[in-house]
Image (tube, rainbow, N blue to C red; front, side):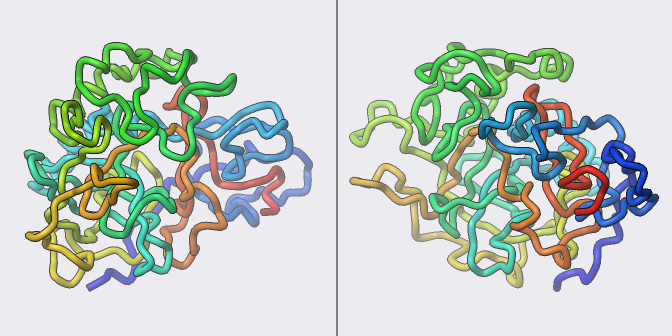
Length: 347
């Protein structure tokens, strides 16, 4: 069964970052802010023309100022993810990996946004509980596209290649548009840190080690030497079921549904159609275009995810204060305050 309401509230933060005029709209309840009560301490305000908060733009758009990015510590195997996994194991007894990414489904009123799925993937030593933060026309309903180090940008790319990109340098070291680098040794050619490197260094992460960790844990496969070429091979998904989002994972995304299942175990009631899968192998190597059905695919585009936009979520399905994904500044770690989408809290 689905839980009617989650007994989890955000740490209500002050709205003073949004005060520009003395109209007293930014009161203790954050006035008319769509996401009032979201995490505020330790965050910064996005300033990009008139766009701020959850409206912080995903690219420069001629406005100048800040840009919203995906957070680097959402990446599979980051120090924050691994601490969260350990804390979850201590509290629940469940030994799993954590992840985030894209799971597109028409069976959910919000296309899966905010929902967590328990994934069993062939050749991966533990199940993965991963939260869907994004939607995409290139992601199928029986596929999970997980954020891993240099996993391929896909349609969009704000990681590298532009003046406002998170990382410096050119595209070639990042490998294929879909799939990224195709072997572990290629990870060494990546830039270690974003242009604004201090936060990633302080966290104890680097893009190189995150990339290598994904190979070590077999969440990506190489296409080298295969007939269809590189970057088209991925683990097969054997089972996918919607589960409750662990609090430890939601703490990283600050995004949570209010209609979650009661537990963390795979269940017949919440299995994704087509699973458990005993008949299909992942065949992203199929020609000419390939299919990502039954695949654990990979990505890393550094771009603000669709779950960070107010227009993509239904407030009645979300926990108050956790209605939109909390995005990051250009360093990939500093969180933006996303309580409002305008100054003076009238939004």
